[in-house]
Length: 190
Image 1 (cartoon, rainbow, N blue to C red):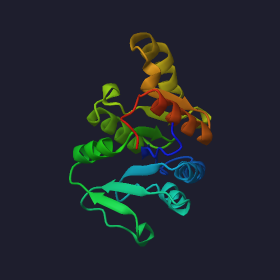
Image 2: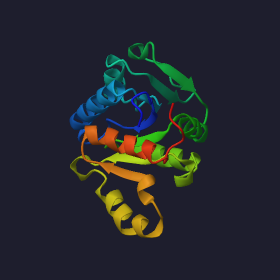
Image 3: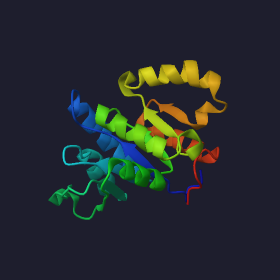
């Protein structure tokens, strides 16, 4: 990937449920690292689920963050300066995220973030929509998905690795993104 490329990443993360502290740390590290690499981040949010550590660290590192929220979402003061788009339905929010993102990045999170990822991936055209997913498989968070990809997808879909990648570290997420862009697996990145 060209050093001048600035992909837009649809980030799916949540700090709700067991393991909150570890997920907050992961979000902070990911937001900071990806922003320093020049990526812009886009997230789905609602009143109960805002990936604050991700947003804060990305902004501190000089990154651009866009949030896509429902119409009832009111921006707390810590989101001053963050672009927030208000869209009525969950389906339309998923479509908007799909329209903006080049690559989806799934961080260990909650069922809510998994639903958002799936909905956005489908609304973005699935695999042929050229929006691959990079899963951060920290502590085997996506072990089942990784196994499914290895056992089923790899045997049934040619070039399956252009649709789904698994990263073992925050830095590896960027390596996978760069590879996907270089392979032409994403829409063109400016």
